[in-house]
Amino acid sequence: MTALIIDGKTIAQEVRAEWKVRADALKARGITPGLAVIIVGEDAASKVYVANKVKACAELGLHSEHLALSADTSEAELLARIAALNADPKIHGILVQLPVPKHINSDKVLNAISPDKDVDGFHPVNVGALATGNMRFAPCTPYGAMV
Image: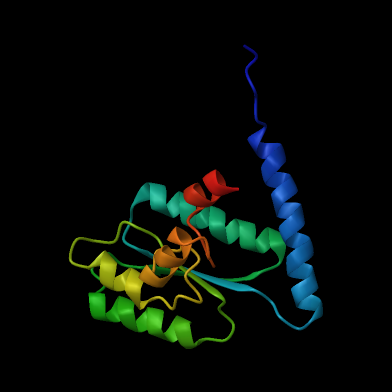
């Protein structure tokens, strides 16, 4: 049996090139896509993941906001930040990097993100849409398996 070798870097470059074209088309219509990424605490792996998202946005010419909150941020403060991002017309997608500190209920946090801005697809509306084949935003792994 011959092994299939997938060149992930090449595929990533091709996908980013496609998304750059799409982002440029939106920008030509006066819309600059915006992503807000929130991280609470100092999880090292999460910090790398978030930094990669911010870098990808910059490469594509997208607006991005990186909110790095301390580990002692209250649940109420985090929910208030999410509410403000939900209302911000410059922000089209919101990602809260998990895990959040133990004193914060991650279900409340994920449910607070508008389903229209939930790029991870974790809001119950988006989970249901994924399950019925009507997805808006799907988590990366399930989406990759489906396409």
